[in-house]
Amino acid sequence: MASLAMVFTACNTGNKDPIHLRILHTSDVHGRVLDSLQRINTYVGLCRRDFGNDNIILTDGGDVLQGYPAAYYYNFVDTTSKHIVAEAMNRVGYDVAAIGNHDIEAGRKVFDRWIDDCNFPVLGANIIDDSTGEPYLKPYEVIERGGLRVAVLGLITPAIPNWVPKNLWEGLHFDDMITSAQKWVPIIKKRVRPDIIIGLFHSGIDDKGGIQTDDYCENESRLVAQQVPGFDLILYGHDHRRNMEYVQTPDGDSILALGPTSTAACLCQVDITVKKNWLGRVTEKSLEGKILSAKDMDEALDKAKNEGLPTANADEWFPRAKQAVEAYMKEEVGVFDTTVHERDAFFGPSAFIDLIHDLQLELARGAQISFAAPLSFDATIEQGMTHVSDMFALYKYENMLYTMRLSGREIRDFLEMSYDLWCNTMQSADDHIMLMDYVLDGGKRLGLKNMAFNFDSAAGICYTVDASKPDGEKVTILSMEDGTPFDLDKDYLVAVNSYRGNGGGELLTRGAGIPLSELPSRVVASTDHDLRYHLINMIRQKGHVAPRARTNWRFIPDAWAPAAIARDRAILFPKR
Image (cartoon, rainbow, N blue to C red):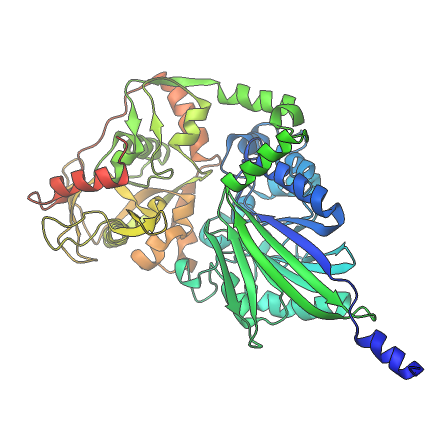
């Protein structure tokens, strides 16, 4: 017969039945709440049915308030109704979210309203209120699921000042993610004694792939996992990368880190199995992750339809909201006398980008030069009557317009960095003129190596870009567009969007060599509304616009560039 001590030992060391938990994660939905979230909702519903509500946690990594007309309409047009993004996320049943840089970009009135309308906490442990020295948002959330206590710590990239005008986050500042995690993980462990700690981060995985200054690093998710012990799982966003990897931790273990790309096209899924002993202590954990594509979720949608399960869409969820947004998008703006293609901007002056240059020079009174880049890669505005919906293709982001004071030398160095990101150094006539890499279709197809929204061209000056010259020596500024001399030592007023003016893309800091702290003093003026708002008003006032390409810059050498452009155009845009 076993002694009482032996029975106690058996109970103390033996395991209960395993506990199964499924984590589902989206990020960078960018306002696609009236279409893409339908797919997410159906898949999440199937998981809740098959695994039980008590075994599912749904998270989001931020950047939901920008990028699509529905979000813009409820950010800036209908500012009194319950925010459609919050309503949609509430309907899907999110448990917790982090805030993203594009949510901050909407301004405190907008993101405060959205957060108030959410039925779940929005986290940001490293967003600090200047008046109190404490986090402005809830730093972490504790979720009880299936007998497990799960703590979720929310952090945002601290690089906000590089992109977002300070008036939109006045009274706040953003601490380093690693420092914040080092502070909060021990607090969570002491206060909560969680079974699982999840990092919910709006920050990319690769610290080499974003902005790095003496004060902060844009993409710190991997660095946090590597340097801060205690996490079981990292769920992140911001870099729009579909990625799953194991990261080595300070204690020699490894943890899973996943990012789902953007616009709810993919969904991260992590199945966690936990074993506890009879005293309730965790004795074993295992995590298995995968990233579901749209095709995977559509198969679930078909399954749901075949089984007669409800698959509500936006018409059924928010009929009034959908009608209001559609009516706004159909509002007439003005007539384009010709069709314009954004793709033309990669190969020389284009009517598409030069229309934006024209607006910027008109708005920024006194500005002699304008910088602008393609923001959507391959948008087209068709000849004829345009509508508000077309303006979201013409200008993707809610950037303000800055007028900045730059020297001629800084302007040249700015353009040198821009074209170095964009233009290859050709070794022969058969070389690419675009800076390409095997980045598409799993490395099977060439694409641009860098992000096109950092490919600024200029208006107001005449210049050449010599693709045969090394980086830093490609741009030669010939004159102002009116034929007057361009002086490297003279100061000019330059029209530039607020993303760039705050240091975004580092063209002003690393390229032109202006210290980040000095950028605010270079801003002479700023618009109160975003550039899309002004584009709409300008086109409405004119009634007709005839966009034309300037002839102020071109690629050389003439013996190589035209043929190389034709070849690379066919690679990048093979359909037409």
